Structure formats: C-alpha cells, structure tokens
Length: 157
View 1 (spheres, rainbow, N blue to C red):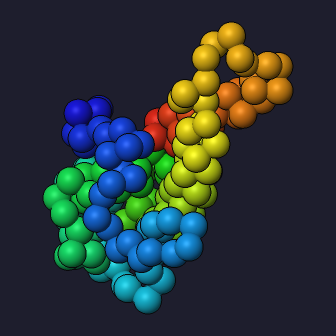
View 2 (view 1 turned 180 degrees about the vertical axis):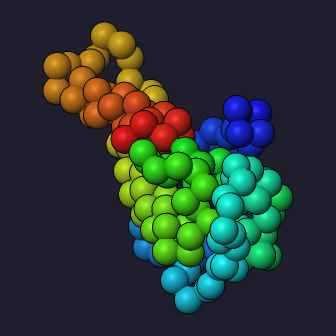
C-alpha cells in the first residue's frame, strides 16, 4: 500500500489484467471510454480526496472491472494528477483528462514492452561470448523502457 492507501502493482500484472481489452493485430490494448459520464461530486467546501473515492468512481463508471484493476487504475490516477491537487479529480473534465492520459500512456508502454520482449527473445539462447557491440543497442533500449515503465507507475513524467 502507498501513502494514499492504494495497492501497488507491477507492469506485468497490469498487462494481464482484464480491463476493457480488445484484441488487435499488435496485441491487447486498454480502451478509454469518452462516452461514459462521471458523477458530479463537487461541493462548496472541498474535503481531502481519498483513494476510496476515486476507486468508487471507477467502480461506478466501469462495473466490469475486477477489484484488482480498480485498485490499479485508482493508483495510476493518483500518480498522474501532475502538479494539481488530487481534489481536482472531482471535476469531471479533469478526471477524464487524467483517465485518458493514463490509458494512452499504458497503451504506448504496452506496445513498446511487447516489441521489446519480441526483440529480446533472440538473446535468450545466445551465448555470452557471441554478443557483439550491435547486440547492446536493443538491450540498452529495453533497459530505458524499463526505466520509463517505473516512472509511469510512480507518476514521474
């Protein structure tokens, strides 16, 4: 659990989640839904926002999500509010903006991760003595991708 009371997860766990996936030629993608509306919960005096409130909103919007996926996406929403206060997620436009940003980033990282895994498969059987300087480029790209994945999950942009 993090300081917001949300569960943390790994990139692999999210990749095998069951959230609004549809199969495409390039693999599974998570889909953002712009047609669904969020409840308007803005009040005159804004109390601190809780992770439970974000999770409850996600459960209302996406009842088909598993509890694990709701927790994951709730955490990702909190991690990607940027410099704005978390309370701003009560605003429907900002909630949708952050949701779409999280989904777009997750889709991009998923595609890159899949490509990196395919590229790295050829190195599984290669002997260490057979590596050349040219072989280092894909390995270094994969390491940079892993760094971006960690940044995504921690909210560092």
